[in-house]
Image 1 (cartoon, helix red, strand yellow):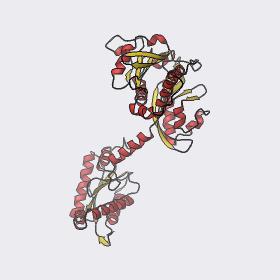
Image 2 (spheres, rainbow, N blue to C red):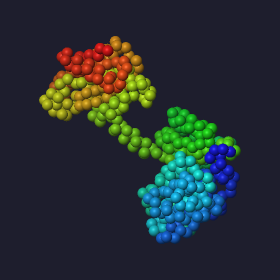
Image 3 (spheres, helix red, strand yellow):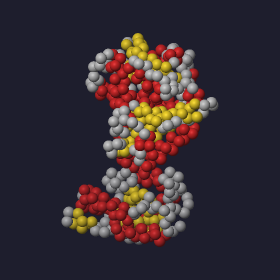
Image 4 (spheres, helix red, strand yellow):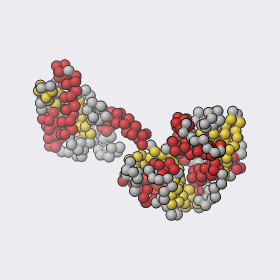
Length: 446
């Protein structure tokens, strides 16, 4: 056994290991098994006293942890140490430590969860656990549930219920897959994510069918690579739940191996739909001109800079620059509201002429740019330029008045050189069109 994952697998609990009968111990044991750590403990923090409520796994690893636990209490967030030998002070027996605070109903006595292992974890897996810790330990998340926790029969049952609810509220679930038969184990939060009845029988083929086509390919590719290399993986995937809801989830996993052979995959699934929608909206606002709905100057510059198409998948072969003639006069004569309406209609006409273009962007007040898709010849580009001149130059009817607006177009082919060279050539052609009386197009003579 040569890899770190293979060494760690000797200590990972087996699927047949019997869980303790006590409810709190059982919950802690299940978490330990699914996360693949050797030991775990749950401690109540009362003033400066640490009282162990439950501990499972190799008890020798839980010795000498008090300095790290006290450091966790002073830490502003979860304390994750991928390899304790990196500490300046004497390292404990455990090589990996993850500590996080779970605020209890009594704000003066929170709970401290400690996860330890005799082998150091890879930085990637350490950060996976850190992500789980941050979401589960979120004070706001716990606070939203504080008033909903039912008074249970005993203190241990209440703590177990709080532990489970914190995971559910953070919309994070733990999963495991036995590679011998592809049998799945899910916590309740994963069932909720897929909108399946909790505890329902699971078949991997059926759950994979919930993934959209692109996400299924990405997930299966990352999973196969992790199994082959006995490594970790992380994929953001879109699913369609049993009730037809579209959701995004962050799927993380780590492969458990015995004698260099992958035996099991386990990890977390987190609902990131709101995060994804926010990210998409933020990206849209960052890359889109709000007035016209076209790409903005920032997105245009990014794509123009990728002349060879390494990032966007296709090279930039040509560029058209468009400037609206007399637009300032429309604003001065008819007002900015009418001017804005004309600008939006001009943008729509431009898009109609440029169907299939790689990018249509507004790069200034009354300036636009088009990056055609594919390798067009001179005749095609001239035809596109003329189409834009005629379409944008048609009459605009506003408030019973006919408004005249025209366009000048400059065309340039990418014959080598930098993005700045291509833009400069198109700009020269645009000024040539304006000098020729406007409402026309000119192509740069290379």
